[in-house]
Length: 371
Image (tube, rainbow, N blue to C red):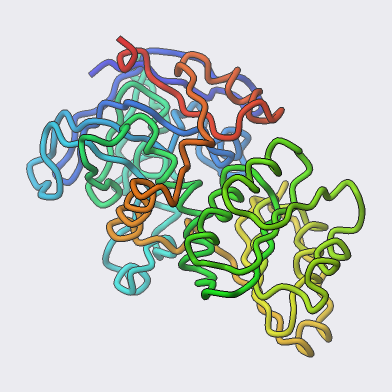
């Protein structure tokens, strides 16, 4: 079928709105009419070839919408169901069987290649292949194909157009605190970076009932929002040494640090802010694949500091995403405060606004969803 999509053709260049051909769903696939899709930094990382998906490509991996067609082997959803999409996983490897699908042994092949696992294309244009199936979806489009493993059915009375970001950025932040770090009640945490992932981490820390929640963020409006969301302290990193500012609040250091900026010097500051046996969680995408970390091994051993790389908040989609939705319905996870809506055709403006801090989390709405 012909669909409208935002196509990435060159690294570091604008997306273009084009007509492409979407394949029919195979046995375990679902055709979804997209009602909204979050704009995530990972989409830009892929466009700029740090994730080596071939261009041209249709990206987008925080989609939500309505099921229009299902493959003959699909049992999870039916036509008309409302769903949100997340990353794909195999369901068969040891990590998947441990309910840790973000660490699926087949994650790269299922999410980054630009085609189905069997090599077949989901998208074409004038008989030329366009990379798709990004994170098992490619939802910068009016419609997307997804595997039934990477979709979650949601209630029809929820605002379907804004739910997509739960499938990546928001579950990464909240899950990083609630699942990966599993911060216990009464613990202290510093969150470095106040974008959508960092602010989701703030909300997750509130849910976990952390006694001291500190956010480090240079943008004043985001620091103010963090306080509104439940942070106890905010730090402007431009006003002095980050570690010293954290230890002015907690001289013995923090129990947990959650780093979402991906900047090496910020990661090092986070590590230096840890108290004895403190745990640092890393989710920020670094500026390049060669980025390394300068770690003092004696200090690491002496104080028992731990470093934990985190993908997708260690989320098991079918249990954690419904949990986040329940917290949202109860007013404990007000992620809608982060969101600003744009038309899909305004994707390049949304990228600029997000980069310049005029919005925190852009959600793109295909034209059919506004009619």
